[in-house]
Length: 189
Image (cartoon, rainbow, N blue to C red; front, top):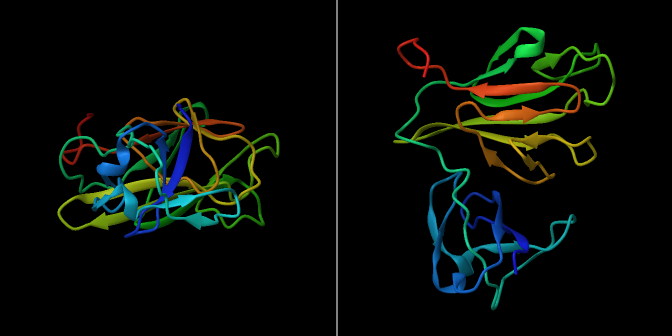
């Protein structure tokens, strides 16, 4: 009964991972990306990797709040730190592509690696400004066929869009990075 289902937000189209549990069909779900609250029946179920969708009839699912933005509005852009290499990348609004350093890479944050396990374009951190909420930082894989990538202990799957929180650890194939939101006053949080 702890099956994980993927559903698509009816407003912004983001893919959410939820646990299959009884009683959800009568509840509302809040999308962690666009913050809109909709009845569960309005969400489209993602069936498989081809992203075929169907409307659920009697699906039983609950919403996990693990990726909610903590605290109040955030009006500060995040940073990606790679402590082992003493690197820091200031993220910008829009799409920030993280990947292996290479001359043919279009990554905006290029990380030098000794092996080629990390793709030249591996991960995307998209920063969106939501009125009244500030900046939301969302991580997703750049393409379907990449080596395992984790946010905390959770494996990131192609199509997932995970809201990053201050001090989240991103484990890329060859290196570990830390996402941070600097304090607006310039002091450590």
